[in-house]
Length: 343
Ligand SMILES: [Zn+2]
Image (cartoon, rainbow, N blue to C red; front, side, top):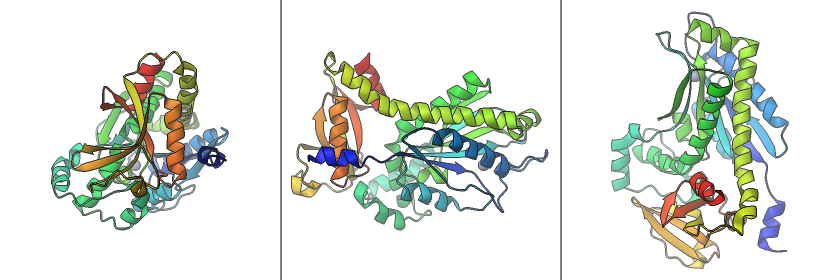
């Protein structure tokens, strides 16, 4: 049996971690209308999970499924331990004005711009994906290096996080006619600490009487949860569907400027490209990104071949390896590459 065939048999489900914000002694945002964020988001989250569980190939894990208190660290840790493919944190917004509307956040770098620069200069942050557990244990939230290390890591998932966030906002806006406040970036702690595509959804303002009424109603909860689960499903299908489309279009693919590689590791250390340094993998390449070296395996014009290479890398122990795309030797978002190729 080939390496590829063996790893194929171990295909794990697509794991979605759903995180209902707050809970227990932490009720969430204050409101004068009596709505409780922790209760509303728990209902929505459980409904999202129920919608998703009906789909083959998807496994749902809840950070909480009852009214209990959880630390932020525990939420991220649940997702990381499960080796989840997606982390979705669900909240309600609040403001002392009558602001309303929905917004979805992905991790932003800009808040830590100066820390980021310093940490990059000092760069003692080493993160080899396969050693990630060890790094996480040493995580110190007050240390810029710790945060930056994770930020760099999460940055690799930014395109995917934005893709999901856009789908969620699109559903809220087009299907539910909610006011669209957009996809935004901010330094949410819980997003800093997950190592998979992650978003935080603000489903609306419970400090706005009308929107609070809606969010607290069973109609509102049903509609909001449907929008979120359909966006997650669409994201899941796009990840799995592209390979099928691509196999079909492979033969007639004339755009040979797009190519794919598999990123297996990143480190501040310059490691020699010898296969014994990389679990026996050959056709290795290295590229510099700031003070970090990215280590890549293989090179192909076919996305389906890239998927096979990724499975091989995963099988050999690079379980967090992922496919990256290039156009004219410039790295581009994977979605853009696939769009260009399947045009
Ligand atoms: Zn919240």
